[in-house]
Length: 391
Image 1 (cartoon, rainbow, N blue to C red):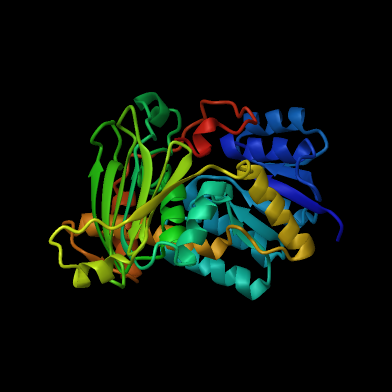
Image 2: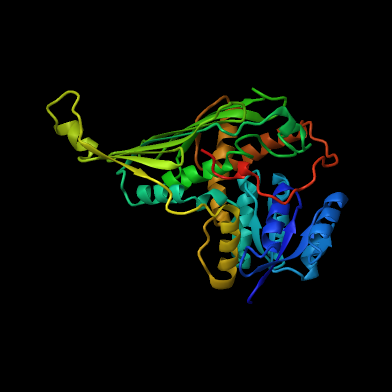
């Protein structure tokens, strides 16, 4: 195979942007073969913009047509695993938008289907291409900070108006979207948090429903986590603050780093802190340290970078930047946070009781206000700046 024929399932904000990127030839080795959407108006827009691509109003018809080697799934979250599974079982490679789905149960089953069918399975964690996050991950993994003591991510620059939530019936509902800020806006940071610092063993959370908006899910959340070595973590996010903050701080035995305002600030201790703690004869010893500022060593390739990597993985066996199975970790954090909230903000050990979570989510979905209705926007085919790393 010299070229991947790709189909887009879901021609909304993200699907139309992916289609345009591929159609413009920006992804080497990939062409746009087909578009599928159940909305007649969106499908007509797809026909006008991409006459070279076949158009389908039925997913199964697309998957059975033989016109594609791979699909990008860009539909509402609760449909991700179902449609991706259908594609994998027909032998197609799959790239799914974040989150992989709304439950760990469905996401794990999807990952297993990909493994059994030996297909490339990726998730659109485009912020993994950011050079600062990649550098921070390398620093932690290589031990530059020593043993971790604390991690704190304040990511509150997701400001949204009520108009945003009213723009789609599925938004901010348990049945339509499956969650709020943790499931829609913050998955990128939840993924990066565990990708850089590792997974915790326990999550306690406060997920405040409709604090700032007229919605039925959370728009304000704080997670407190515990790692296996005793280190603690905090994750704070909301769509109701302006101005917001994007600041990741990671402290260890050998110093700390802070990612903020488009750079890494690094304080490097000249002696390991534990040694000073137990050997110094001073009550408040000052440990010598060096300071360094690290700027990005290249651009963030974002969505196009993930699409190119997905293509290269299929054609040349290149390792995936964001394997689909990695999506289980991010989803584990948000599912556990909801489970903690629903049980009175109790600590939830990982792995958690997925059957209990599924039951409690099901109860909320059954009582949800979500009712399907006609889409009110036209896909513009552009990547919004809100999907990029913003400092």
